[in-house]
Image (tube, rainbow, N blue to C red; front, top):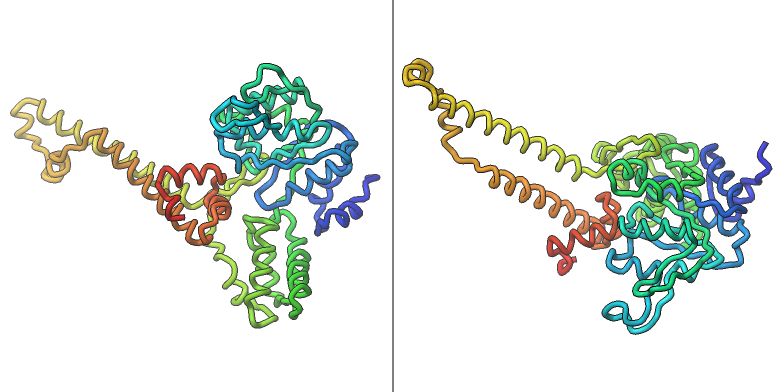
Length: 394
């Protein structure tokens, strides 16, 4: 029997829901809060991972000290080392004074590294040094700085898969994953969806002094079975949109569908051993195009081989078995390998560029929302926008 008052924690941090998976995650967070163990919080985007980092800090022995949250994906790769570890005056162009980084500011407190899977590989080694030795080198410095910082990290990507692909250090993964907290997706706690929807609608109705939205039983059932790729954040956005725009306060299924993208148009979810991670339509398009191009290359090489073998054969054989008209028509065209590769590159880049432009248009030019829709980090989207010369347009 747990001695943790989960209900009290929910009330304190305004967490809604009665899912056993949610209660289990809260219970683990409370149990590790008093320790100095590194914690890795995993779960999909919008599931509320940041709330669990605050639960840990505010119930720890460091609660009177600083709590600093850092979004690793939002910091440009060229400045992230300075942001995290600081720099000394003159260490690079524009460094006109010494600067304390986030780790120095969080000394004796807690630092929350959100989207830690987006850390550049070189930075992962520096973070590992902080965890192992409690020290780091500011940019341009020759003397290490000692700190005592509790690290809580979060990710919405499968770090084990990233380790296998050589994108994330295995030693850092196991250091961060001393304690693992899995935040359930909204799909995994369907019983909480009606409660959350009513709460968001009631909150907005009270704020603006208008009647609360009510759903018919069929609409409520549709809401519960919708996949909610953006989790609680997406549900809140939909609830607020309906509350503000819908004239009829009693909403049926047909009206509800007008505010939610059709399920059949949503990107496919890829299941992993650890948790689910979403995959956007553009990835499926690119993968399919790559397959088609590879098949085209193989067919071209096969046809070339057929023609070459025919022309190398004896005249008698050639007369007895002339190449068909179709084969000659196809193989008479020159298909250099480098041209095929160039065509593939152009096609894929054009597909990706169009997908980025569409996502930006749908999200009113907001990079963070477009990046989420595309399945990129905001930093990756920004780099791609520069590559495609889209910054001036957006």
